Amino acid sequence: MRIFLPNSAHLANLEAFLRKCRFDKPTELHVRLHPRWVSVHPVAVALTAAAAAQVRQLGGVVTVGRASSKNHSLRYLAAMQLFKALGCEPPEKVRSHEPAGRFIPITQIRTSAELSNFIVEMVPLLHATKTEVQPIQYVISELVRNVIEHANSTTGAMICAQYYKARRRLALGVADMGVGIRESLSTNYTTSDDLSALKLALQPGVTGTTSGIYGSANNAGAGLFFTKGIACASDNLFTIYSGSGFFKLRRTPLAKRAKGIVIHADPDNDYHTEIADLPAWQGTVVGVDVSIDKGRTFAQFLHAIRTVFGIHRQAAPDPGFKAPRFA
Amino acid sequence: MTTTILLHDVVGPFAEDKDAARDLRINQIEPALDAGVPVELDFAGVPLATQSFLHAMLSATIRSRGAQVLDQIVFKNCSPAVKPLVALVAEYSQETDAMRDRRTRPEKRPSTIASRKNR
Image (cartoon, rainbow over all chains, first blue to last red; front, side, top):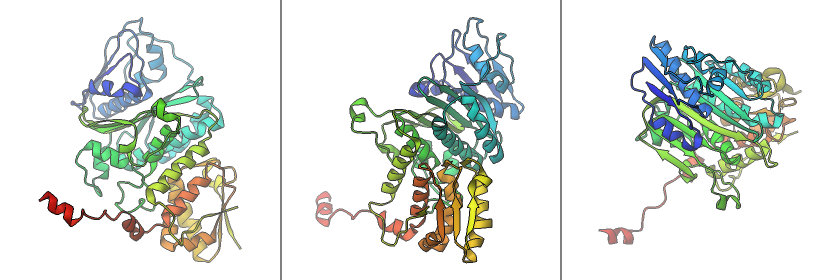
């Protein structure tokens, strides 16, 4: 496998970064850094860490290309614990950062208990308000639980994040080297390719555990739909990559934004980019930006997403439906 | 008599652990309902829950017992973020496969005149 961390790989242009990756030899990983500086979304860091974990588990070799001492990103990458995840020394000696207030370094999560602990422990790291933390906790829980329950990944989920306090925005990446979405859905759904499987998984009520309506007793099949919906409602980007398929939710164009941002149940109706022929990644990688701003609360986001979920199901409630009793 | 379940004591301030949700359903909610005892789910101190958690805690119970089971369950102290999710899960869990099939039945085929024109 070969990964080049460039001077720009964010959600807006992630596909260019992915296209240059090579995932062919599962027991070798060579990571190269841009000679001057590296500026990447946490999703690129999570993907690199997931690849390294898999190679190391197979007893393979991970190497990092030489970097100039003038590369100012080495401190950032070291603070993200990328070199620790790769099992290599940084190319140059760097002083470590104090992580509080800016980012969540690469963390490997394999079990439900580890996830629950992580969600509690990461809150003080971000120095964010309760309101800001809610959507972040929600998205992390849904994405990592997907990995634990469906990916069948021996190395679990790799997660890392960066918080931009000025913009009150969290950039989050979650990557695994499991079976991938198409394989996960294959027991109950037949899809023509990875991209079709991705788009199917983004629809509410679709889960690999059953073909029945709205999932099984323990799986509703709405985690990815909610995550995409939260990104959409907060006017941010969302990407998902599995096998050769790639889907990116784009921002609503300015001209259309005045009428309000619309969340869609069918990803084909979103403003999006889709690609079917990227280098095949064995597993799933999700990148998402989340923010709370402009006077809107997370509860309002959830209410909007719930409305879409309802419309997707039916135009009007059936007679005989009961509403839950609140006290 | 009512069985009151204080969710904060089980899951803390963020209800997201689906294993805990399933255990609550199997070991506390279902047995109480079986005994004809109403259940009060108290979300005090739990400002946030995931839809997945609520699904694992409620959906199978509503599906297996029907909508009338909601007369036996009260959702107490739900925050503005939890309320829409409880409503959503309760709503879709009442939908049966037959209802879904009725709604998603394919549209009528093109009229025979149009079909003949294409011949």
